[in-house]
Amino acid sequence: MSEKTLAIIKPDAVKKRVIGRIIQRIEDEGFNILGLKMVKLSLEEAKQFYSVHQDKPFYGSLTEFMSSGPVVVLLLEGEKAIRHWREVMGATNPAEAKPGTLRREFGFSIERNAVHGSDSPQTAETEIGFFFK
Image (cartoon, rainbow, N blue to C red):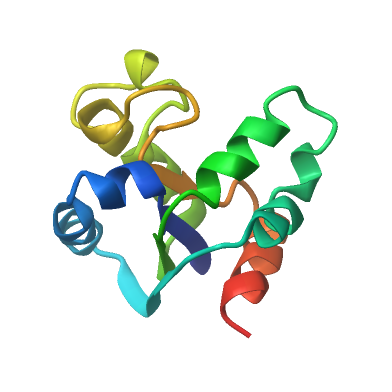
């Protein structure tokens, strides 16, 4: 089943200059890139985007990090895109991510883990709408 998902290349990966390597992996995995742009989130935009986590202890540091530098947002389409992208990303904690996953290769910590992806069709719809009107 073809579906859409949102991917974000986070500020840490942008700073490491691995955008091209991550996009190459996206293409190699068979995703269609329907939209792509670099944006700099304000703190307020980051808070709005991650509002689902506002009651969690990491919310403040996450939103500060996500607004600390530019990010690349991508609208991806593919067969079971949400699950597939999450498999390519790997576990949230890079230390626990399987070898060959993006977070294992490019991540530094649970928060600075290089990439983001929608976790459900409902989340994907909301997140895609946030960046691609």
